[in-house]
Image (tube, rainbow, N blue to C red; front, top):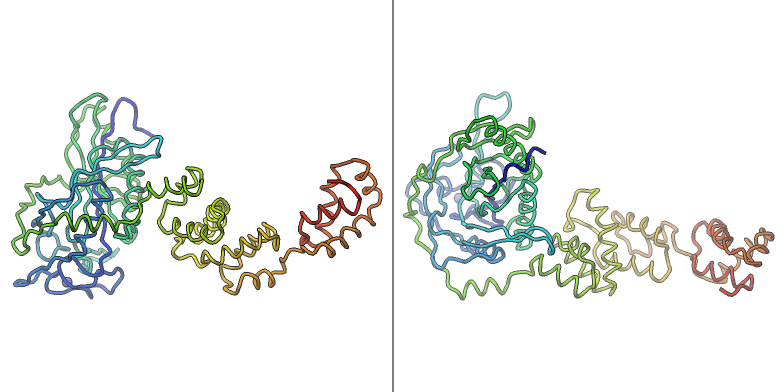
Length: 482
Ligand SMILES: [Zn+2]
């Protein structure tokens, strides 16, 4: 693309992830997605006078989990602040956020692979409440506001300006989402707005110590959208500087449909928000015992899991990477392997047929209907010669909708392999009898005819003869040592 070697790109990302707590951060309203507009609100999240917010401790615990997973220092003392701004989707006229005393600071996550990994610094992770949602219907003069989302807990994760390309930024987002989902604290669904990303972008000459003037970019709706928008903004900045212009500190909007950058407003500095400590909430303290307790209960995280899969199951690095991409897939694999005691074959089934089905249907493993025990049963039918590997694929596809026992599905599809040698002998003898010339030539050493014979036998048995038994039978009936 346009990012040429004459410029170094500097990107920092601010990600907002909705925490999947049952209730909002300062009141008891449910924080579910998709409820009728303005049906999940109360005087607290509506900002009525005289009410007091009460902190949802689970959101603090979730924030600490994220901080630990991203190698942060967890604050022993943390406090909320009011960020003042006026916007129709904020009924209070301010947002309760954190400013000078965030929950977590100074962490990092690794992107890239083991041999080529890069540390991306995490400046801070803090808690805040979400705003409502303004809705502008096409061809209607009015705007509407749904406040169901107002007060839903958000985690704001701010990276250091360590990212050097749109591609690295994409990788960072994938990694961040993977971690949050492993922790089970956010579903990170960008389409439903439970994950949002803003970017700060500047460019400078390679070797420069000072950063260039940065712009902020908003309104990206997917990870690929972030990547595309960053490319467009970098191109715009390079063209501006190379034609003698200067970069102005602004907030820009990405327009996905036109693929263009549109200027939204001059960027506010933090002064403009007139932050001050939230007087209605007491500062909170977190002791080491609580942090240790949360640490002990963290799930095994992707990098560790991947290393373990390589050493414990003797998987190739690239296979372990695929199998640990999501916690659900990793757990499915381990459950399957426990039953089959065959990690390699289990991995192949998941990376092959299972992934095919998930991709085609656009679903996650959690929505996949064939339980590991049923897949293991199918795999057993292949290994004991009851069905061929190609028939297994047909049976597998049928199992997606037919929940009857695997044996009955095989029976129903008529795919049970013929493994009774006397039965196979009968077919083989018929094939030999009707092809005496070929039989003679094979007997006198024309080895390549073997494949032809097996083909004839498979044809005569309608594809059901166990090929290995058919092979043995052929040589035995022709008195050939094989
Ligand atoms: Zn409420």
